[in-house]
Image (cartoon, rainbow, N blue to C red; front, top):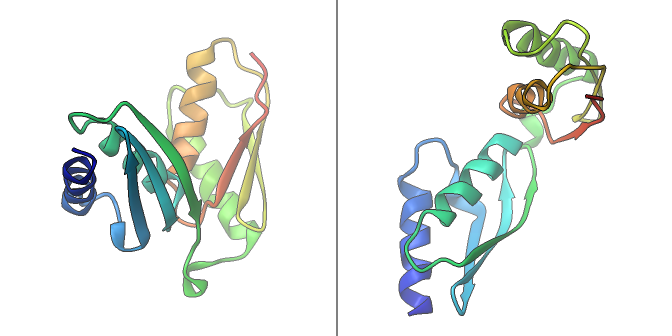
Length: 141
């Protein structure tokens, strides 16, 4: 049964055009799936976990993946911070009080919002920006 689940999860990851599954290793034990390896963005990491969770027989998904950009894709922090702040500004659910800073590809979100959904929208908006390695959400509700 575990081998069937492993094959189905692998197939789901490879078939999803939003996920670069080349460096993801799938391990299954008693229906519990562990995703190991690397992906090029935080957004792909989240997509991979969600895709694995949709496979029949999966009881839980353990995300053990790391975000690792190919060296040619890493840009400077100022440029990445600008891209991330542009993504925040483009999202109507995120108030102007939210700001992002960047250090070595890691994003820090700060500010104050009225609702938890606005806090989540900010994190979702920046997770999809190319070059983001991780997001620390310190936005206060």
